[in-house]
Length: 73
Image 1 (cartoon, rainbow, N blue to C red):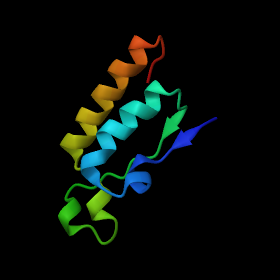
Image 2: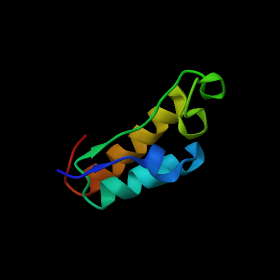
Image 3: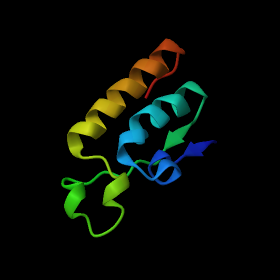
């Protein structure tokens, strides 16, 4: 299996949604995404963490990509 970590791979939360969707499009089997209810106050890695709304949007985007390729999340 191929596992992609867009959070650590990019180091910036604003890049994570695009990289996650691209990873699904490229055939990744799993994603590691850092999520925090308030990334600005996270003890570590807040700059690369998605908040809950961003996570939901990212997963919606990833599902759309997966379904277009005949896969599911």
